[in-house]
Image (tube, rainbow, N blue to C red; front, side, top):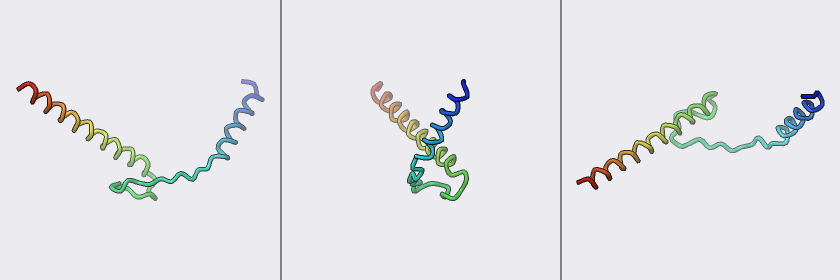
Length: 73
């Protein structure tokens, strides 16, 4: 990449970062295991979300299996 193109690309990226609001309101789930001031809060919340999704999938599988069993009788 030419130096001028690289410079313009970097300046455009910096401009975009400088103009972003950066004031996203993050509301933690009520049943979260970690507080907001913890450095690992985003990772713990991602794990909690994955656990909820996994539980939803297991529940759906159980219901589907019960429906199949009921139809086969």
